[in-house]
Image (tube, rainbow, N blue to C red):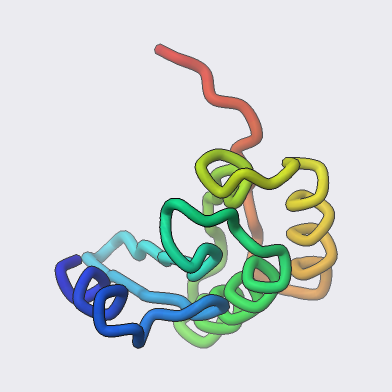
Length: 106
């Protein structure tokens, strides 16, 4: 995971990009949705990185991805706006997205 930190610091991890970390049987996709943690996420960056993530998943035989409420927590965006982008972006994908809209403490 260190290489994503390096890419953030040297500017090669940009808005709309995706960093993939794989440790079979799991794969983690980090989406470039914010310039940094202090700045709000951007809807076009969510759309672009989500599209790229879905393509990478399809190319690598990943059939299903769990997704949190990206952009709506620390990203500062309105969840309904983000949800609309997710639904629109994923509508033609064969990858099944499971969006966890509500966090329940155990």
